[in-house]
Image 1: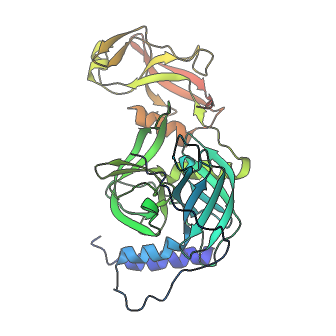
Image 2: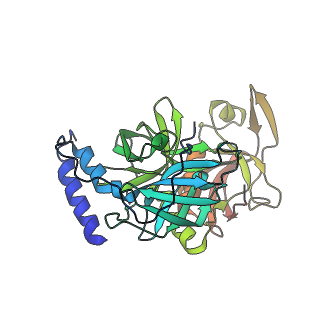
Image 3: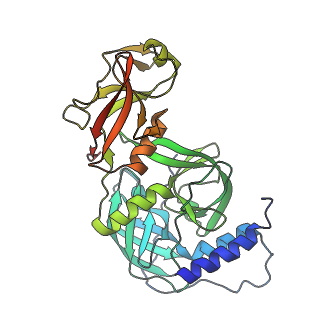
Length: 368
């Protein structure tokens, strides 16, 4: 595996030198007979164009990307009771995809670009990160695990989304990273996904669970959703690297939990609370019996601004364990990537007109 990854990096590095330096989850495929290990992939295509550095990346990773076909899905998701998404080989026997792709399914099959089919078993899934792991019975010889990028993506970085939009296997779209550290609401669920990567690479129904890779062929995110208007989202490699090993080992992953409701401090919240700057997190509610109960103080009252409630009084958090917390995105990223349940952290905050520090022991986030 190490040799393959080194070769892949070398090929892609040379190719890269030539460069100028709605939910995307499920479609309804037609089911064919289940086969394991058969191949109909045509490798000799005759005369073809030279392609580009993008072609080199595609050819380096495509045999490790799978089509995910799910059967027995609840009619709440699809009328035909079957769905389709994407995934990729994480190690020699496990494939990563989105939790929402396999949610409600009774049976999941995979098909590689070679045409090989395999049966799977669900090892673990995590709703809060929208990640799931499948154990596979068969991996073709050319399919090698993809590497999660160790460096955080940056805005403007070139990326490629590889997967099966609308069931069109082996598709690729190109774009850049349009934003990082996003927090996006989970559809029909009362929580948000943290540390999400934004991209303008086209993603459509069927792309979900597939890799968003950089020009080294490393995974910077797992495609989660397409927001329309040339905006797509992916669960970050940083969060994936924390969640997936736990799913393989234990079948579940525990997220840190504060037990609060909050709002990013904007100009109006700052003015109503006599804050010098519009930055930080205003605590609007503390969940009774939760980790913050008795440690953090919620707003004393609220006033309405259109459809929003402005918290008045209570704590405003500026920093946690030395990490600045200017808004809700920073808070969700800090909790997701820097903490674990049971950690005790220092919270620097504003209370009753003065700065103070409290110690907070994080709990386990309850099931949504």
